[in-house]
Figure 1: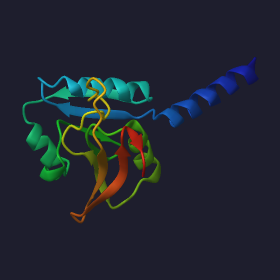
Figure 2: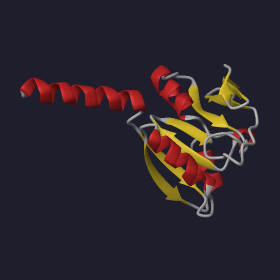
Figure 3: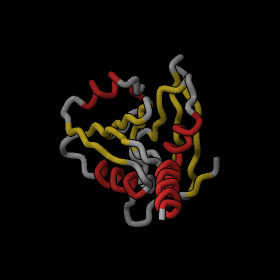
Length: 151
């Protein structure tokens, strides 16, 4: 019996780590509907979501170092990183696993159709996930074409 309980506990811990298991603090406008859809997708991918509705969304983005040109509708904070907009769970997990010291966060600028939470009748736009760094530079972290990851 002890081996079964220990095995289950170990399996649960590993599954939690593999699925995310971290809390994303999400700051969003009280009127945003797509942010909630993104949050539900993150929950399905193992993240806990704590929502903060605020009318001071620009101030929140500034506080967490999100560049204006990379901004979107909501800002998440997880593991010390900013997650801006409709970033796929796969990329958040990759960021948390890599733990790059020079990165402030990752963003999907704007609100591209077909990105997580922005599903609209089968319309899918290509988009990049951009890493923004402490030195003010940015680079492509991942690319999605026709709804599939290509980089």
